[in-house]
Image (cartoon, rainbow, N blue to C red):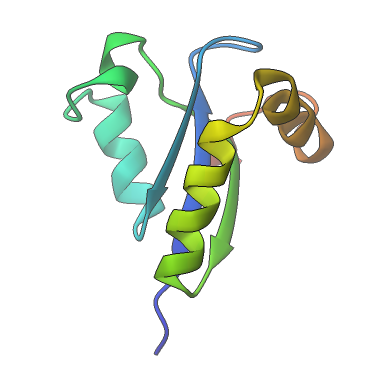
Length: 94
């Protein structure tokens, strides 16, 4: 059975601070962000709303995509988010 990897973007509010991450267990990772058990950037800026994610079965592809998105301009990330989630809904609550 192939493992699924997630590249995701979280925020604290619409058009707020953005964080790009990668994980093999999105639900568990979001619990960590929500409960602030992840020290660092996401806890500091209260980032816990999942607004975008994509999947792959290849760990190298996931890490490469995460690094690529982290280098993107903010406006490009916002365009990507709004293409698939125009209302910035929390995708963990759908």
